[in-house]
Amino acid sequence: MLKMLSKIFHKLYAIRMKLTIKSKDFTIICNNCLAGVFYNDLGLKFRSPTINLFMYPSDFVKFCLNLKYYINVELTEVLQEKYNYPVGKLEDIEIYFMHYKSFQEAKQCWNRRKKRINFDNLFVIMVDRDNCSAKDIENFKKIKYKKIFLTNKSLEGKEIFKIEGFDSEEQLGNIISYDKKCRYKRYYEQFNLVNFINEGK
Image (cartoon, rainbow, N blue to C red; front, side):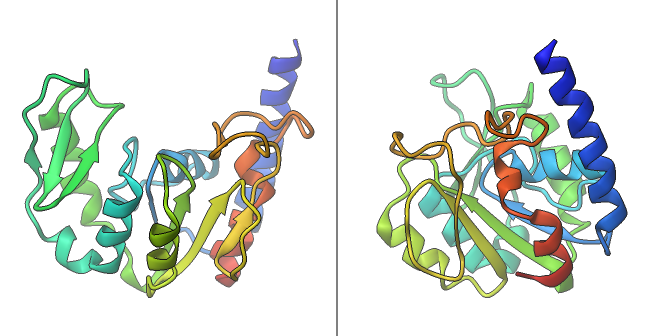
């Protein structure tokens, strides 16, 4: 019952987000599924290739620092038996397509969505996961696009935002799950993504 109520209230909250977002033509480049969840909440077309996948921190930062270059590199398959989902590669960057059944499907979605990128209204979100290092964070700050680093740590920097609820953990947990303190919102919504898109801050 509580879970059902959370979903109902979240839908109402999502309607509010739809009414307050100023632009529908924006691109979010993210190192995990968060971008896709946000687009879904707003009922918008995916204008980013980084949907339903994840990259390790160092690869993600490298990708964002040279975004226009890597976007034009052909995605190739990494033949492996370690994971039960496809893995792709852009030269020296690996991408883990954990929500795709095949590499062919992943590549088709990647190629289709990368054509929708709006480089004039682009935002980068990095979630503190997968053993993100201090060096990764410092390099993240060098990214030229509007950006935010979501973390559970108390760090300094205008690009940093702390998500509450994961203080006892080494990294952020599942921030697309519902916040225990505010059950109609997800953890990631502690950060005002609509305002981030609207105002770039």
